Image 1 (cartoon, helix red, strand yellow):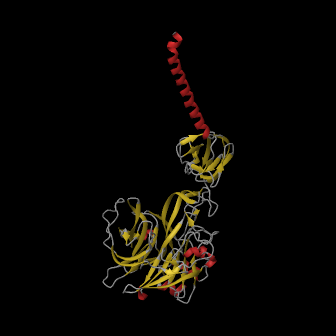
Image 2 (cartoon, rainbow, N blue to C red; image 1 turned 30 degrees about the vertical axis):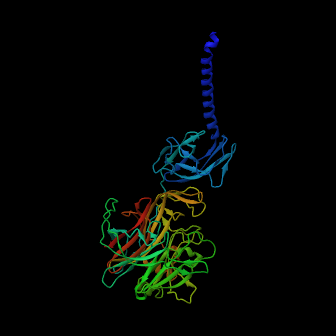
Image 3 (cartoon, rainbow, N blue to C red; image 1 turned 135 degrees about the horizontal axis):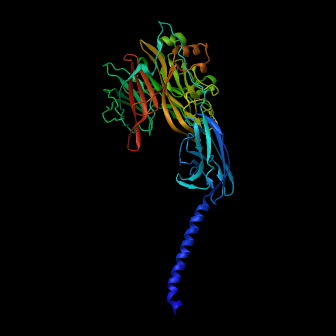
Length: 536
């Protein structure tokens, strides 16, 4: 009777024990799904401050699930996700699957801290950013020592006589204010568009700018420059929006039976001929070079008359050096160095499938093309083949990429990487000075080619200011095009936005207009802004 009276209690206790065991099994089986064991680690015992060094950490998959793709990576610990070695993660290589029981060597370059000392170095596997599992690497301390032989980039401006103009720099300009292009014109939106800029003075004295949107449709239009308002502390609500004065619509030149080309790079307006020269590019293009240059006459009655498109006979075969856009050279420069040719193409930098691209800013003079030509010759003013990259700062390190992968020699000395762009440039000449200016975006921090995508921890904007006499020397064969380096490389912070996609200089007013993409948000989209600088 006693046994029967207590049997429900015993049964209940048995159920509790059974549930607890099941819960424990579930927890264990979950940990067995994803588990790892440390095998070995190859890392220096001592590094110099800012030194970029390789590391290999080998682990074994002791769980039952295969590791692959973005969700699983090696992450820094002690404390979790610290970036004292330049990054907080090391990826499994693209296309790799680490099956149960297999060993895998995580490989990457890392960068030493900026200050000396004994610094902790420890890592552990993590899934989905917050699910840590397996055995961490042994706690290790690496000695970081001063670098007494750190290289330094020093660009010394060329000496000039008292009668020669100085080479202008960023400090010679004053920020005057900004304004907004319209967000939408017809069916085209400023979001995701990388527009060039071209000045058009009007008979009534009111200047206009040509702007071109490319997404989701291509539309060319003119805006009137409004009153300038300065951006204060990132606030843009008070900025004026430019009025649209003329919509030209879609500019398209037949290229083949099935394809047309239109402007998606920079452009320039030739008032005397009522003609807009423009460039087209295809960032993922491989193989044979496509045509790049087109021209469109804009008649007062709204008629569009197209010429081209023209291929380029590019020096060194680096035809992507000149995809960024077109500009005009100062008449005095053209008469002295380029046989009177006043058109030039640029602007250099990385494009996907980088083989035929310039590893740095670029510019080349071209003759005035005519309808009978199929290809336009380029006289190189400067460009950079892959083994002669342009200089830059050393605020980066290449984690895992196999092209354009030089590591910086120090915090102030690096070379052009696969995440460095130049989408705009302008020739500037005032009474006081002159310069060719390339508006550059540089990737910073960890650079990687991660699962088919170039990534960087950050970005910095620079003005590269060149001496026109150096460009002239290259045009005349007195220097090689890749010997040309900027007189000044200045890091700038725009009042809003980042990458400059269009630029033009008004010699009458001394104003420099820069179209900066992704400048201010509206919902899920970011729209361009135009900043104006005045030469002092």
